[in-house]
Length: 255
Image (cartoon, rainbow, N blue to C red; front, side, top):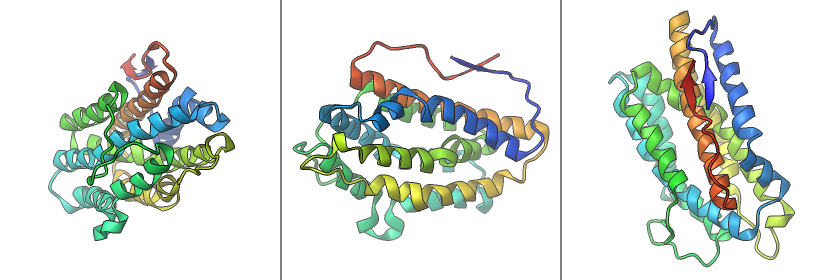
């Protein structure tokens, strides 16, 4: 369990951003899942299982954004950045760009032979890690203030989503995972290169208006809580893929 002091002394948004990046680097970038993926340590079966489990997280992300939209004040400055993100999930109105369809192009190459229905849902059991990750995000937003909700999506997800998804895409290109059947990583690289950086910038433009120490502390704790929940998701995925027993939680606790 990661313990962070409840007393914070942030004076600028840049300090908050740097503090969340530090958590991401330690618990996600250098975590066991991304390390093993990048090293080519997983089997083809484990890569398939990852693709199948992450499909649940991916297709539920519009629900997360919907919960965030419901949590903020009904003012344009709050809901428009979140709806813009949701509109991207819908291919900005073009069915060919639906993220569910983009993910399917990855899934069909990473888990060939698995039956996928017309709604792009694979016929495969969903593990507890993916279910917990989605529900934890939605539960947080269900009790969040307007500022906490924007920080949760912005700092807790979009800040680092592009980099992490890029690392996943790069890892999936490892020679160990690409024989006769090459994995289509277009879904991952599209998020890394264009989608996530823009989504974060839209959230950041709102968060920059809140620069009092107590506001910066609130922004940090919301972002850190959700970022560490995502880190826990990757750790639990690693455990499910490798058959390891659970380890101590890396979720946020109060000092």
